[in-house]
Every structure is written in C-alpha cells, then in structure tokens.
Length: 403
Image (cartoon, rainbow, N blue to C red):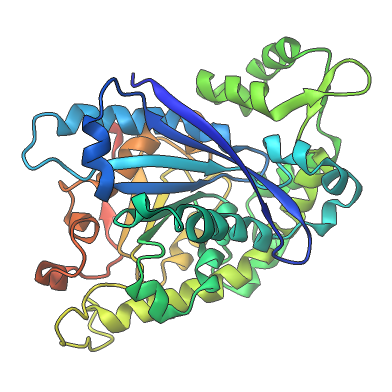
C-alpha cells in the first residue's frame, strides 16, 4: 500500500455572512525523489466532499487505494495514464475537526449552517488558495462528492458564470457518488423515501453518542450496524477523528446528533437548488456536445464539443438508502439530465466509501484512466479528438470481478 504524505490546512469562509473555519487535508504519495513532482504538473487534483455524519478522513483508505492503483497500473504503460497530483478532503463545517473549530456555532446554533457554506469551502480552496499558486496553473480540478455533499459540489459551480467554467478550467469535472439529490420536488415527501432512510432519520435524535473512551466506542461500534460493516480503516478514522473529549471525562461525537438529525431533516429538501443547477449544467453540456439520443443538435464549430463540465455518476447496485426508482429518475434524459457516464458498482450500497474503499477507488480510477472511453476528457484541453466525446447515460460493467 502506498504511504501517504499528509498536510493540513485551515481557512475561513463567509458565504452567508457566517464566519466559519474550514479544515482540509492534502494527500500525496510519499516520494523519495522529485520524479513524481515533475510528472504531476498537469495531473488531476481531486477535491473530495464527504456525506452526512462522516468527516474528511473517511476518504483516506479510498485515496490510498487510488494511489496504489496508479502506481500499479501506470508503471509499465507508455505513455502513462493521467497522474493524480494530490487529493484534498474538506470537512463539512459542523463535522469532524471543523466542528471543533466552529464549536460555538455548531453547538449553540446548529440551524445556522447551510449547504452553501460547504460549497464555498471548495470554491475558496480552488479559486483563492490553490488558484493563486502558479504551480497549479496546468492542473485539472475534479470535484468528487459522496451522498449529500453532491449538492455542495454542484452548487460550487454556481459561483462562476458558465462561460468562465468553460474557458478557465475552474472545475474540470464532477464525480457524484450515490448523490442524495431529489430527482423532482415530489421526492421531498418522506413517504417516497426508503424505509431505511426514514428509520435513520427517526433514530438520529436518540442515537448513542457518548462513551467512556475511544477504545470503548470502537469495540461497541464493531458489534453494531452500520459501523460493524465498515472497512476497519474507515472505522478507525471515524473513531480517531470523529470523537472528541466531553465534559464528563469521556468522548462524544464531534458532529452532534442534533446536527445529524437536522441534516437528514433538511437533506433531500436542500438538494433542490442542486437539482436545478444540475439541470442547467446538463443542458449546457448538451449544447456543446452531441446527444446520442438525437434530442438536440450540436454545434459543429471547432472546439465546441468539449462539455462545459463533464458529470459522472457512481451508484452502488444495492439500493438501500435510495430506491432504484429515485436513482433512475435522476438519470432521466427526458428531463435533460444526460451524464458523461453512469457506473454501478457491484455488491455495495450507499456507504460504499465506508464499506468498500477498494471498489470505490476502482470506480474512480476507471473514470480517470485512459483505458475508459471517457479518458479523452481528462487528456489535453481542446484537441479535435474531444469532438468524438458524447454525453451519455452509460452504465459501465460491474466492477467487483475486476478488483
């Protein structure tokens, strides 16, 4: 397994007039020489967003596996497949380390936080921090978001006019893993949610949230669903970074159960602005590329076939937190939502990042690598070859057998 070099960053956002501190970590493979630094000057920079109740460190096992796949699969290829320069994971401002930094707000006024705050954390990191560093000038920034954070990733694109998104390489693409997005306003109705979603929503306010120690919490969680189903590395990260000391000498959740309950209550409803922006992005992409269903006529001018921002969807093929109907409705091309690719990963459900980092990393790598039909969107900028790239709702083959 690749050893990661990890650095931390704290920065501030003021999106809705609320001053919040943001906690981020940057992950790179630990290298003994400068060879890779030379290679990654045009590589991908992944900006990774986590779901409700989790924190940025949940991504670490997936990131380790991604860099391991890169090392394994590119070492003998010429030319090599696209290199990932680094991965950045950011806490929601009321989760993980960030919840401690913003404790006064997150505990006293949990309702003050907005999904727009999380969207702005990615904008601030991309535009103001990394964007002001000349060494990132040629990198491609990919937003990778799981569950409810898919809305934040989509809303991050609203901070820029569409022509800027298209011409200035702000965000190269979106990868949405099990996006918690209502496909129509009707899906805000709890009656249309799965029994699992309704059960979790009800249990949040009464869930166990204190233990005598982190070790006691880990042992307890190993015997309970869903934590006992998680990859051991993810569970360790959840305990190490998601629990904090309390006033009674024990430990408690850094993301309070009130915060989690409020997130589930708001969750599907607050995804609607993301749905409208997703519709807009898909429509804009369709007007600069060919639609294989033939519903729109593409412009034929040179260079016009490059989508404004390619959008990839990754589902688990176990329909647990979200129904297959909800997933299929989100892919509805009749509503103009035609994605660059749609992947279904075998034998995993909504918590694929927690239960199967290896399968999650393989799904991401297949999107990024040149062995897939979508690789052209990650290679070069405006080559004529990109004119053959078509937006499509394509299901890749199941991934389990290839792991």
